[in-house]
Length: 222
Ligand SMILES: Cc1cc2nc3c(=O)[nH]c(=O)nc-3n(C[C@H](O)[C@H](O)[C@H](O)COP(=O)(O)OP(=O)(O)OC[C@H]3O[C@@H](n4cnc5c(N)ncnc54)[C@H](O)[C@@H]3O)c2cc1C
Image (cartoon, rainbow, N blue to C red; front, top):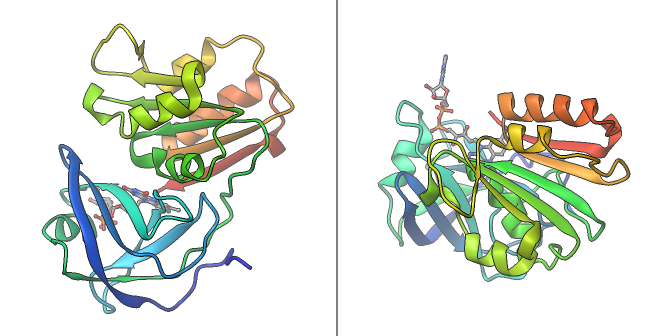
């Protein structure tokens, strides 16, 4: 049985991983204590006094470590503090929860930035076979886990880069990539993960292309 509602309690745990995998982007992890479904999230904090923030689980459901991927908000509360930690330091986490759940059915996965995290968890769980993944970033060094996605999805892995050009990437945002697609399947689910403006714009494009609203599932990072 998996939680769909946020658990109130946080437990203290010890970081086993703290890597800057790209400028200002970190992958951190600790020993996995719970089962979860790929796509779910945890609450995370550095103490129990201040409100925790929410992070999608990036690692696979059978991995020994539970990892999250985050970028620094320099004027934010938690992320500047998280970046100064190191393996062995304590953090406070909740049990996994949430309703953004991957399945084995054919679907499109659409992410920007660190919104790729739940799709990495789904890929690690063996759900990538019949998926199309569209990942949008500003810079070429922000295609996190691209080797794994390329290997799992092949030609169904589309990389969109808005601020730099490369021969093997689409030049522009995910929204332009999707706008240019003809005949998007209307009987599949479209999972969208990232910031609110991208999610809303993407939703509108999909609806405009005949995708039923009930086939659009969003996880908004706000
Ligand atoms: C379901 C879900 C999953 C998420 N998963 C991820 C993930 O996997 N990876 C990830 O990187 N992020 C994720 N997020 C976002 C994450 O929870 C945090 O919001 C983010 O990391 C910033 O936290 P922070 O404490 O550093 O910044 P915050 O202190 O929360 O501030 C965030 C921004 O808001 C601004 N702000 C704060 N207070 C005010 C105010 N009073 N008025 C105006 N502006 C203000 C800040 O200047 C800053 O730019 C997720 C969010 C949700 C809801």
